Image 1 (tube, one colour):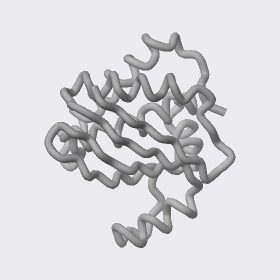
Image 2 (cartoon, rainbow, N blue to C red; image 1 turned 90 degrees about the horizontal axis):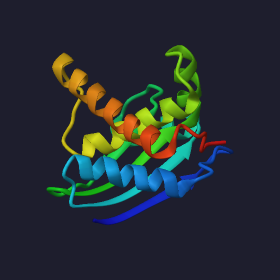
Image 3 (cartoon, rainbow, N blue to C red; image 1 turned 180 degrees about the horizontal axis):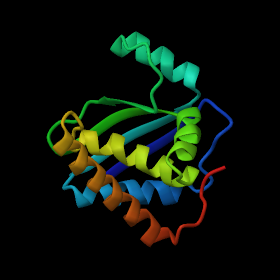
Length: 149
């Protein structure tokens, strides 16, 4: 599979082992029949993601992720912006580790590109199951080592 994954940091957060996350994202994409991926993940704070939400979606709310999806068929192409502030808050709210919440949100963005949506209760359940499956892939491959700082 042809794959490019880039990580951009607009906050003090960083992934300490980008190769592990890249191989995980490729495995998730392959599991869902993607033929290639070209992804850029931009990690930012609430204010920056809120500004993107206002500008591009006209939503005046905080969010954890915005996926700019340019996928064509099974060739996944996307720019995915993630608020590290929301990941921190949501990990506490949902009693999850920061890394697990990050994995869930990153897989959520990828899964949107792979045809999953979350507009109905049934679709939300399918999305959650796919997120759980992707997260399990990461933990099996990487033995739950903490790869973020």
